[in-house]
Structures are given as C-alpha cells and as structure tokens.
Length: 235
Length: 235
DNA sequence: ACTACGGTTTCAGTAGATGAAATCACCCCC
DNA sequence: GGGGGTGATTTCATCTACTGAAACCGTAGT
Image 1 (cartoon, rainbow over the protein chains, first blue to last red):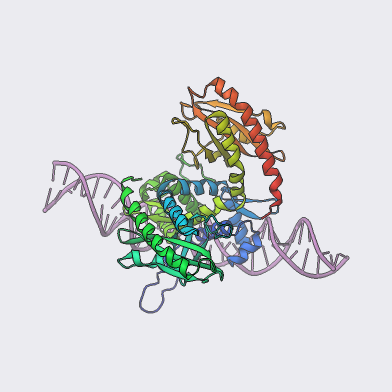
Image 2: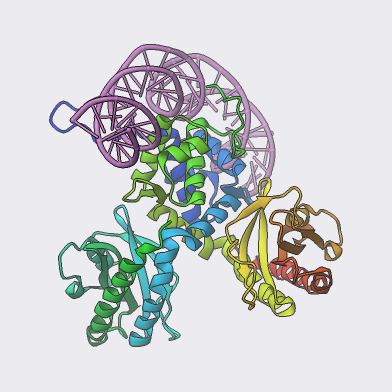
C-alpha cells in the first residue's frame, strides 16, 4: 500500500481482496445466468486458478451450483436469501407499498410501470406492473442501467424541494425504441426510489408522455407519503 | 488462525477465511433482518473489529445498508440479485412450474401448500400457495429447517424408485402445533424438490392428512414431469 | 497423431487479513 | 455532573491464508 504524494488521503478503504472477489463472482454468475469458468474469469479479468478456487468455495457453500455442462448458476443458498430479501424486511415493504401505485399508473397510461432504486452508480428496476397491451415493455426487473444519462438516474439523483414537478423524460437513451418518463419518490425530503413508465417509442409519443406526467407526479407523491407513515412498523 | 473450541451456532463450512466470513455475514444479516454489529459478531463468534471491517466492505459494495440506528440490513445490490434469482433462470422456472400444482393442492386440501428444496443440510421453503382459511400456515417462504427429523427432509433425501408412494408425515416436529405431509418431486430419478402441506395440528388431523396424500402424490408426479420436459428451453 | 483449448493442480512468496488492546462515543443511573 | 457500563471504532505488530505463474490433464477437432 503506497500513499499518494499529495493532498487527499486515498479513499482506498482497505477492502479485503479475497472477499471482494468472491462477492464479484457471486454477482457476475447470478447476473449472467449459467456461465463457464473461463467466461467469468475473463469478465472479471482474474486468473483462472484463483477464479476456480473461489467458485468451488461458493458451490460448497450452496451459493452457486454447477450444471451438467460445468457452468455455474445460482445455488439454493442464494435462493433462500433472495426470498428473504424480497418477502421480509424493508425492501419487501417497499415493493408491497409500490404495487398499487404501479397498477394505477398502468391503468392510467396503458404502458408498463416500473419502480427503480439506486445501487451505487446504477439504477435497478425492482418491480413492474405490466401494460395490458401485447406490445409492451417487460422483463427488466432485476436489470440495472447507468445513472448517468438516463431519466431514471436523473430522478434518483434529484435533490430539489418540489419533487412533484421533477418529472424527467428520456427517449431512446439506452435502447433506441424505448421511451420513458420518470419521477422521484421522496420521503422526508430524501429520494428513496423512482417511478417510471416505459413504452415503445412510437406509441408512447410526446403526447402520451405528456399525459402520463400528471399520473406519475400524483402517484410518486402518494407513494412517498405511504412510505413515510408506516415507519411505525419497526423491524 | 485458531478455531474457538466453543460451539458455533451456525454450522459454517470452511472456505477461504476472508471470503467465507464475508458470505456468512451477508447470510446472517439478511436472515436476521436489521441487526447490530455486536449481535452479528457474537452470532458468528468472530471479533468485533474483524466483523466491522467486513460489514463496512459489504456496505461499500451495496450488499448491505446501515439504518439510522446503525443496524445492518440488505442493500440494493442484494435486492438486484435477489430479483434476478427469482425472476430469471432455473429457479424462476421451478417456481413458475410449481405454482399451479401448489394451487391445486390448496384447492384439494384447504391447507397451505409449500415447495421446498435442499440447501446443504437444511430444507428451504421456496414457494407457497396459502390456504383460504383464516387460521393457516404462512410466512415460511425463505425459511429453512433441518433435514434430519423432518418430513420435508425425508422427502428431499428420498432415493427410491417409486417416488409416488414416498409420502412422509410429521406432526409437531419443529413447532408443536403444526402437522404436515410431504412428497418428493423427482425428475429423471433424482429428487429436485418436495411438495409439502402444512396445517394446524388439530384441524389437519390423521384423517385430513390421509386424504391429502393422494393429491400430493398426484401433484408431485405431475410437477416432476412438467420439470422434465421443458428442459428444451435451454439457458 | 498432432494441436488447441478449457479446466485443474501445485507451490513458493508475500500481500493482505487478523484480533488484542487501546480509544472513543454514548447512555443511564446515582 | 461524575462514574461506570455498553458498544462501536481505530491501531498495529504478527503471521497466515491468499495469490497466480506454470505445469499438467482431458477432451474435441482435424
């Protein structure tokens, strides 16, 4: 460990190498679906031998499993914890609280509505109410996009007072045929999530998006309030 | 590194020390809900300083968060991966395939039906269809019980040919007022999961359990077949 | 039979993890 | 307001447990 010559002390928080790598592997394997040793190793640019050792450990602990082809995927322990995260605790409450508002947005706009939260420098879509239409946005639950240059990101970073008016729009930023409108969900002045409506770009046009804004603003405000009050329910 | 001669509450398989500990911490924190530094440290019987260092790293990576009281809980990265695990890949397919059969069991027995899988020496309940009755078994999704001495465990360990007849029963094994019947779900001769009906012991009595057996056997066979065929859908 | 390509094993060197102890930050009680 | 108790945080000398290059193995392709 060397200290840089000048000014600010390195924010290089001494994070354990071994642990960090194991976690990165877990993340990579779960995100990429079934994946082979060589592929993960290359993706994280770490030597195959080290990668193998870690993957073995993860499999032994039940965090990952190996299918017949030798490829790695999520294991029973991951599933156990995944269910805990989504059915207990703060996140479960967030998801439950958001559902009716997502559905209301779908009813109002006929497009799919998502809930998103921030994860470091990315935004993660964590819940959806799907549009009833045949052509619709779907499948992005658990998906993450960069915070920079996206509408969701803008909402999640929002730090003004009047969150109601903070509706951001973005058209074809990530995928050329997707258009979206988003609004921050604030509780006690802090943005905790964002509501988001996504649709095909030629149906969800300027006029449709404009119409969606009102509903979005109303629902994000309502969700924010809903999240503010039941803080009583501790634990 | 000495292993404390004392008993360690969670039977942790030894992997690389640093990585293993980080993962154990992740598991403990997610399982226990919001929990303080001292509590986790004691639960895993590791020194506070080491525990703190690891928790900090996990928080920095988004795996955990710290609430206002300083207690730790699941973080956004955990939620992202949790959603991936439950909405993509093999487990998602398992959950989706099981749902109709769980519902059929509820319709047939009027008691709650669970799907369980094996995780090391434990059985994890991973899906539920709840009984319509007011008094019912609920809330065990993500919960795990030992494999030894439970009916679910017996089913998950089953290795005979005729899985249909392998219905196990258990009454008050873990909780005194719960009775259950279970059956293994086999695909290609290997047990991959277990179906399980749980109810209050005095309503779900011998007669009711006997009646449930047929439905259980039928549904577990059907689920096994359903899981066997769509293996086509690779990835 | 030869080559290429993943996965697996080995092993010596040292980066990096560890934990006892000291310190700090609160509360609560007297 | 001071004293004592609890729990979080920092420090640092010690030494282990992690690393990765290289060699090896097995299988598939030509």
